[in-house]
Length: 52
Image 1 (cartoon, rainbow, N blue to C red):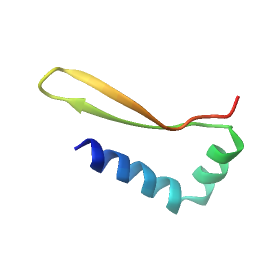
Image 2: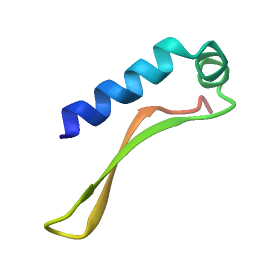
Image 3: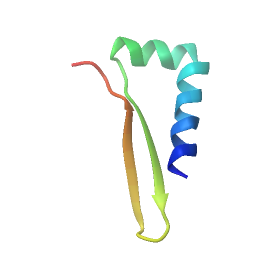
Image 4: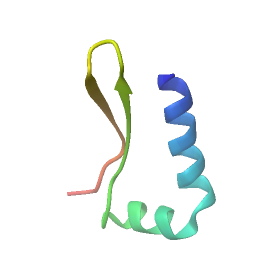
């Protein structure tokens, strides 16, 4: 499941010029996350973080 979530985030980044431009400029970050039904926790993984 984690791999699918990451691939979806990658696809959004690659296919959306608006999101890609904002991420690359450091204006926004792109985070993938998934809900683990066994633990009840949401797990986050920074895909592209804003430049500081």
